[in-house]
View 1 (tube, rainbow, N blue to C red):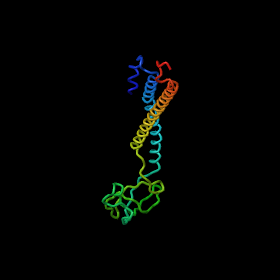
View 2 (view 1 turned 90 degrees about the vertical axis):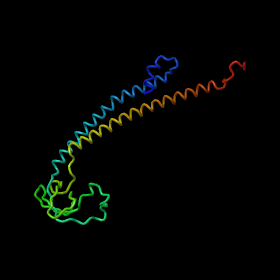
View 3 (view 1 turned 180 degrees about the vertical axis):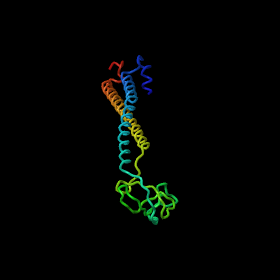
View 4 (view 1 turned 120 degrees about the horizontal axis):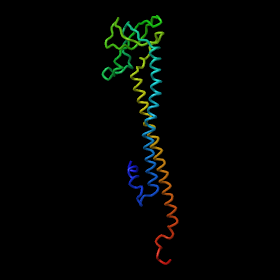
Length: 201
């Protein structure tokens, strides 16, 4: 940004070197690219991710079904289960043997995790299954999918901006490297005569 601010002040300054102007123009071009490319990249990725995720949401809601399961009996806590004092919301679910009817009419009974604090025989709780009655994860909802799409777009915009800035730094590094190489060559030419001017040697 300092190079950009200095571009206008230095444009006719006799002390301004061509490389200073070049670096300022590179910085200005990088800023313009970031302002143009990053939003476009973010928008394109957000749109693509939104379409893909919303299709996944529709597919999951078509393939997964919410059924009402009935507790048959409560299972003892597994030794591998989390400590009740440090358990999270997911860990608060209880292992039970439950029975339910699959969407295709098949009766099923197997151990599952119930969203009940103290399940008793006959208690009902919701369960997500496929059409054959196999337990599956809850389908993704539209709002969560949109949030993921926005985050993907934001990440793409940041990545695009980072790539442009990385390119700018690489170009400036090469310009500075060439400048130093030119100084080294000039020094090698002037070095043998350094300090002899006016000595008559």
